[in-house]
Length: 302
Image 1 (tube, rainbow, N blue to C red):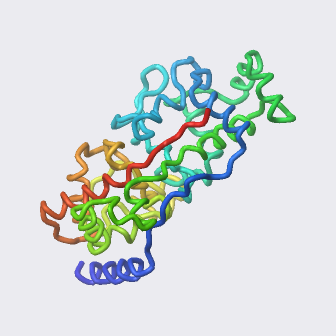
Image 2: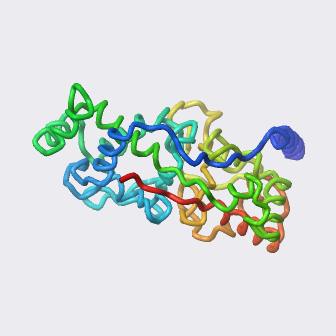
């Protein structure tokens, strides 16, 4: 166990030296017409088999981009088995879903629509439904071949590209505004770096750019097997895509299984099971204060 800790500590040190956080760009390139159509689809319950669930049901754009539940509720009251991640800033993730099974936003959009415990639809039927509605003309105006499975997920992905939250207090600080965050919050950022949190939570999305084992130093119970569900490789058990920390104070409950509501408990647990580092209550408060500076501003296209 000691050797394992030394090896992991040395690895974290190397990663830490190469790690940095970048501000979210103020704008991102996207196709406006496709995104506007995608927005309409995102909020439309027609995408579910019984017309009760939309993408927005599990991804509330006014409240952190998730649903605030441990597990989401799908059609016919069916309960999911993994915590819904935020859709905000998902364009910056290197893979989608906790287990990384989708390579991009378009591939991710297919999953919930056909998942029997989420929207429970199938694309062949959905295309027929949409062709009998005003969507027929809307799609024709944007896509030459009209309504197809590919065009549906393409439009959804184009809208989701726009869901970025730039201009957080911390991003202003990164751009040179020393007064954008307080001395207490700056101390939290220094602890975030020095404790090793930044070794996994870095880049534009402060996460979302690698896999990490849940329980790197100390084993921690998890019913979900993470990336193993995709690869069936024993070495991938309990590896999950590292979540973004953008807007983290708005996206409780936390972890893939929604086990904690309190951000302080999350920081305390991560210090123990991922980093093997002691941490005091004051240090936790400072890191949480820093994390709250990561809330940005979402502007939904009109």
